[in-house]
Length: 201
Image (cartoon, rainbow, N blue to C red; front, side, top):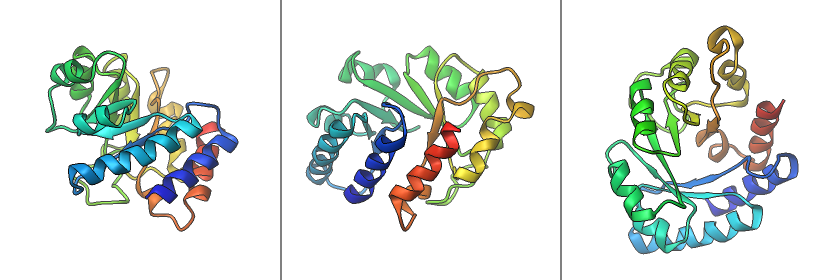
């Protein structure tokens, strides 16, 4: 994982503006000590490349590793409780599966929402029906909040996430979150370059 993250970060820095890439640490099966050790290792690499580190769910690990933020899955802390723990300076994002959940996240003070699955995921079984680009467009219209697309994202599908016939003059996704397209690739750096080229064109 560390090697794949570093390869992705290096590839991003070579072709994308600062802030184009962030890393989320999502390892649900690791013990707290092992997860913190991994977070420290990723933190140093993210700092080197100017990429924020977001820790999934584990607020304690995010604080101990001095991460830039946390991401709250659906069954995690309430937004207000997470904010009280991590403070105003760190990012707090939430998982959302419907436009109404995006709107609720905005009302509760989230900094961003990750919406999905847009397509059937590449890295795991789908947990709910894929919404498609139309569902993503509805989520982006639901609130003035940065919305990131998740689920089955590939370079070939990125054009569907900004198609005028679907999004019209409404807001577009702030970006895309990927797992399988990078970590499932034989060459994570090449996969990252392909994704970024498709995003930046």
